[in-house]
Image 1 (spheres, helix red, strand yellow):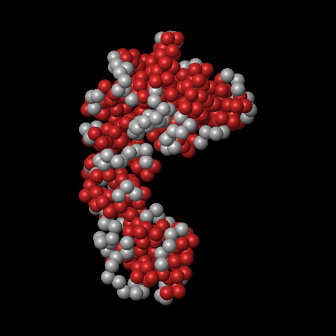
Image 2: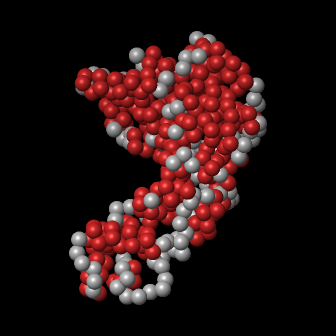
Image 3: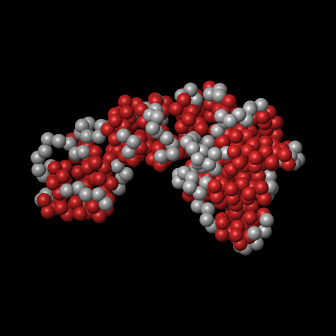
Length: 435
C-alpha cells in the first residue's frame, strides 16, 4: 500500500502521465495546453488543478517534489477512478496486495485521519485482499488504529459503508469466511463491528449461523448470549426446524429482562416468543401482547448505541405481521413512525421495513389504495446489504398481495421472484407462509 507521496515511483508517475495523455487526446507541451487540460479536469471532476501544478506533474517544468495525494486523487478521478489508490490497485494489483499490512493502513490513517479518502482507500484495500486471498491482512483488519479509536462509530456514513462492504465480501468468499470467523470471534472490536453490526439475514440459514456460534462461544455476557440465541432461533424458524426452535426458546427465556439489556436484543427476545407461541403453541397469549406494549412504552426514544432508532418496534411489527396480528403490527409501526421522526438519518433500512410492513398490514385489512401508495414509498435500494435479499423477498411477497387484484401479470412476477429467493436461500418457512 503506497505512502501518499514519498513511495510513488517515477515508473508509476510515468504510467499516470501516459494514461492522462491517452485520455486527453491532445499534446501537452505548453502552458496553454495545461490550462486547457485544467479546464477539462474541472469540467469532469469539479476539482481544480492549476496549469502550473500540471506542468510540474508532466515534467514540463522541473521539480524535485512528488505530487501530493490530493493532486493524484484529482488526476485519478479524471481518469475514471475514485482516487489514486483505486487507480494504483487496478494498474498493479499484485504489488498493491503484497504491500497491504497493518502498518501501511495505520500510516495512511495517520496521514488522512477519519476522512472519506481514508475509508475509500481502505475499502479498496479490503476488496483487493479478498480477491487475492490475502488472509494475513484480513486477519489483522480489526487491529488497525482506525477501528480501535473511541471516536469511531458505525453510524458515520463512510465507516458504516466500509463495514457493510466488508460484510458483503465475507458473504461472497465462503472459504475465507470459514477461516476468518474463528479469529474475529476472539477480537472485541470484530465482535462489535462484524458479528453485532452485520447481522447476515441473507445467509443466516445457509452459513452465517456458524459465525454466531463462534461468537457466542467467546463473548459470554448475558446480552451477547441472548443476541446469539435469538438469531439461532430465527435460523431454526426460517428452515422449519421445530426441535431447534424449542431448544433455543428455552435458552432465550432463561435470560433475564434486566434494565441493562439493550432494546434490540430485548425486541428479538419478545419477537422469538411471539413466533414460538403462534407457530408451535397454536396461539399467542393475550397477556404476552400486553407485555409487548407495556415494554414498548419504556423503550428510549434517544440515546447512544442507536437507541434513537425504532428497531425494537420494527422487529416486533415484522413478526406480528407473520403471525397475522395485523392491527397490533400497525399500532407498533405507527408509534415508531411518529415517535422517531427525528431519528438517526442513517437508519434507512429500519424505516423502509416499517413502511413495507405497514403496506403489508393495510392490504390484509382491505385498505388496498392506501397499501399501494405506502408500498410505492418503499425504496428497496435502502435495504441494508446484510439483509437485502431477505427484505427484497418480503417486499416481493407484499407487492404480490397488493397487486393481486390490480395487475395479474405483476402479481405473478412478484410472487415468482419472492419464491425463488425463498428457495435459493433456504427460507423454507416463507415458501409455505406466503403460498
